[in-house]
Image (cartoon, rainbow, N blue to C red; front, top):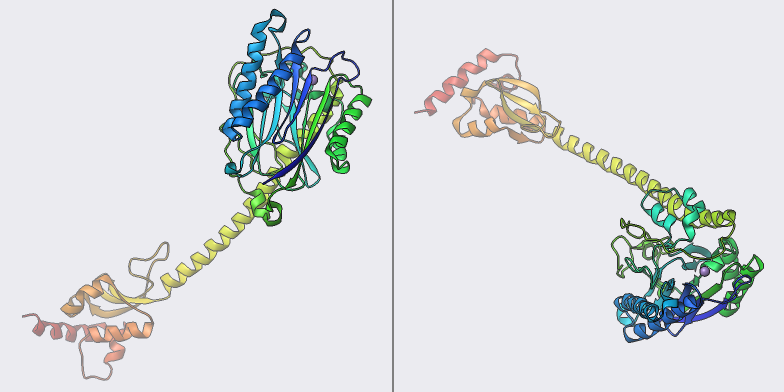
Length: 447
Ligand code: MN
């Protein structure tokens, strides 16, 4: 069984009076929830969501079970919101890593709704696994904004999907084959708005203990301003049942076996960003009261997150593969064309050319673009061919060599005792003298 070890840290930050984030560290399910809503709403929402998630997933630790557990969390938040006027507009993000049961190959499943994130550190490289459900991110996915525009869009704090207030299409769900040494990071925006990816990666690479690493990241966020609540969960893969030992490069690149809940939500490379489907629904915003981090800081982390992973690497890989494929294809076609040419032109046949028996080089009727050519025109006419050979000659009697063709022609002609018959029968040198006896030779056989 896959073995995990996790640690977490959460902090109110330096500007807020209460911590509305909530972390969940359980035996096989881990989550960060970032609550929002006036008064105490955010706290209530994030706690209700995490508790409902944990309880529901315990009953059904499968991919379907995880989706159901997120729905249950949404229902729990909605129910609490209806219970009090003060809580009416509350909501919460939810980002989850869960270990599926053995029937589902011990896969890790990742679900997210809102703008809390999941990252993966694998082989020392950090990649973002989730996409934020924010207005500029949705517009980016629909092609209405460029990455640069989305990075500085003032609506980036407006979330399009959260539990409670705006469930919409629900969570994005993906799965991940865990390998020993993998390190997953779940965090609220209070971390990634304050600490850039390079610094996050450095801590994940250098601080082994997950609790200590989580605390280190929280401390850095506070040192950089701590404008929001900060929550971090780190999940380490300690044992992958020997997968890492047996995994080849091919396996690492192959499509993963697990299911994706949403069309288009398939993960190809283990370290690459997943692409979710393009949503065309009307954007419904949920305003989020929080201090905006400096635009430059967000812009920096955005560029680092998106650009190298989404575009540069896949295109380079495709180009190399396409060029290699074309070279191999050309080579194969060249060899095949040569082989066909040798086959098409490498033999002879005896056939008819405008009423005369002729020796052709090539194949009767030709082959592809290789047409037969007349090698020698004999003095024999069609009418002089013995009846039992007429059909064969009409079709073209194939032989391997020119010598065999000449011998066949000789056999077609009259069988004169004259020693010069061989020459006469195979060349155009004396047509009249050989045609005449041939005609007479055929005549007696006719009746
Ligand atoms: Mn937050």
